[in-house]
Length: 196
Image (cartoon, rainbow, N blue to C red; front, side):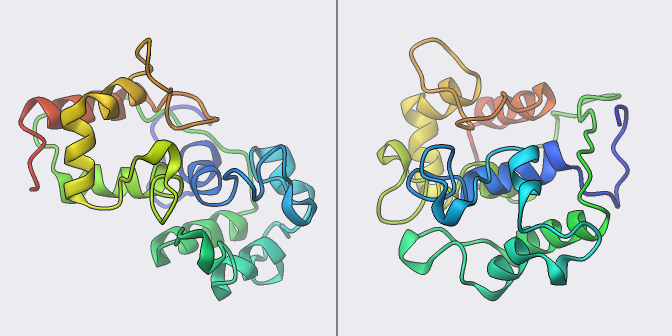
């Protein structure tokens, strides 16, 4: 589905896949190389291969492991929020479809981008799975305002999410964030990357 996203729909490519990639498909777990317990959670086809019962989150092993707190493992340093778990359940209960939406549809308001309202939730869903815990990806933590601001100040944060030459393109293993999200992040940074 292209066009403006319906507010009550869980979109796999935009909403759900970043959570799986950031929280489950990390190195040594359910990535394309390790495939822990024969689960590869890197893309739609592999996520649906086993452990997902479309229309029934409560009968889906992948979801029940996440909902119970068994996954991600406690020793990984990665945690999923209740909102992330609920979004995965919603996606499964809505049929576990490979729906996409165009977040750039219409206008992209960059005037009132706030850390608490946009930046923090975006980083939580798309970055923190890899950039938190005792061994964060690339040695870069993005688990609170202070660590995010430090990465912004070095230029690494912007260079990575904008896919600039010389920086590791992020989110790792997925396409560049939608341009509207990139524009909002840039606007927030240009206004001082405030904790607002």
